[in-house]
Length: 301
Ligand SMILES: [Zn+2]
Image 1: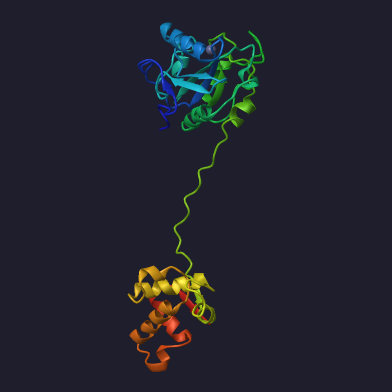
Image 2: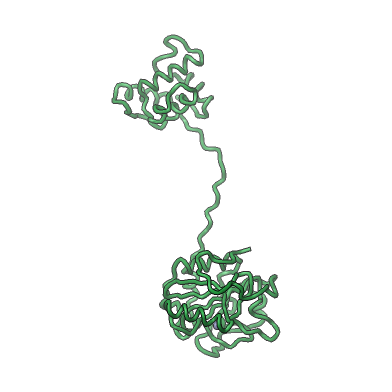
């Protein structure tokens, strides 16, 4: 199931313009129209009302000069802008048949002067959410009324998902939306790849070097409070000492091996059985490994 109402779009009418699709197992498609009117808000409002008054509502009314977008009805139901092809209800062909009336004239293709913005991107996002591919299965659009290069091949219409002009619909004779630049049409709403969810992985264990800690001791203790030498590694040790309940939180994140950190480390050594001079002075690899084993880091020389 794709998007049914585009949250960025204004609403026009009461939302009930059509019904269930006749052939929901056929691929989804889009039909582009032009309103054969001017552009801008006055035209938008007038055409918006006019299409309702004649019961020929598309799903969407779009102004390519302002990026204004309005929606008449839900994408998963039919719209009313096409003529039937004999007994085939073209408005109800496919999983979806998204019809877009673009303010403008077929004789002056809208992609020449348009200013697509966020609403155009939202429109394309909703279309793609129904699996409609970025292709024009009939090939060419019409450059004038009756242009024979614009095919209306019935079998293509019935079997291929993608984008069509009104000029491509069997049983219809209109030639809109004119020869719009289909490459520009898709390029104006680039498909943004969904960032893949990173695999939850076990974060690498931090590694702490005894030599670095002792270098930090030598420099940080005599220096001003807050002096740091190997702050990343000292912080790992401080966090472990805090977790042991030996270092107050306010010292645990500064990365400076000051006298408070030194005292906490000595307390840890006593806690794990060191006594006398073995519980003070330079940090030894053995005691650091004991702390590392309890707090998920690696101790090295
Ligand atoms: Zn049309």
